[in-house]
Image 1 (cartoon, rainbow, N blue to C red):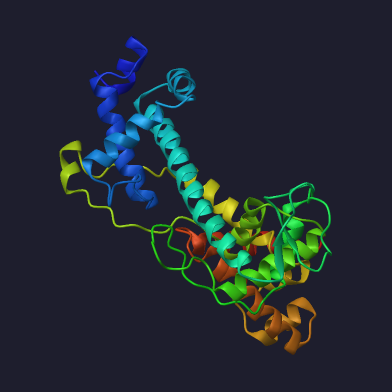
Image 2: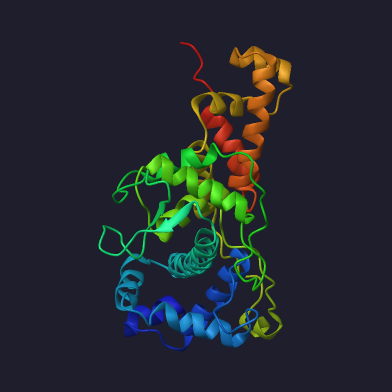
Length: 318
């Protein structure tokens, strides 16, 4: 009896379905280079089992189980759906871990910089939000994140440090001066105070924070049939398109035009875009820097760049 047949018959995970769940956790963790759960240094057997049980242990567990039973129509679809559930869980964990460390880092930086102050208790956002000390950011921000990210990208003189969410001592993303400059630009664009979480969202977008590769020991998992392929083509295509659009959202219309011809020499780019050679070279350098920051840690970065260039290319005249 297969795992899917067992779930259809019993409405619950038995031996076969549980074993398949372990296989899928192992495969998704390896394919996505996700960090292991807290308390584990790698994807050992205990780490896989703990994560597998967490898939259905929280409040959404019963709903996930019902969706698997209803949406799956054979063994292959059951496995793909199960892998997606696991992938979503691991992504949420990685994002939460990275953002939490980033918020703590931003508090350290902003608390030690006289340009920033915590809003006084009794005012909106008091005791939590950060504002500029020059009193130019009254009230509480309630706008579009994309506007603040655009302002953050205008801060070009930054020093980038490789982001490692599992590092204990290495300062994440950038040095203190760069983080302060980006936060100041965000607050000035907001014209109001912001919470550490909101500032972290801006900084994360500016520096393309994401989960980093980890070492995945799997020697003790070999009995569960090696070689399970967790990343189906459809999911990869969705991620590539999402990455391409994320890159385009960080570019101005002129920069998008340059991106479309980024693989060509400056002279040809200038002819294609109608810009001067100096302006083209400057824009191309800026676009390449943004590409590195936005796509530098992505598994499909080359495919994402190719897709973004195709989307940015002007439509041919009719």
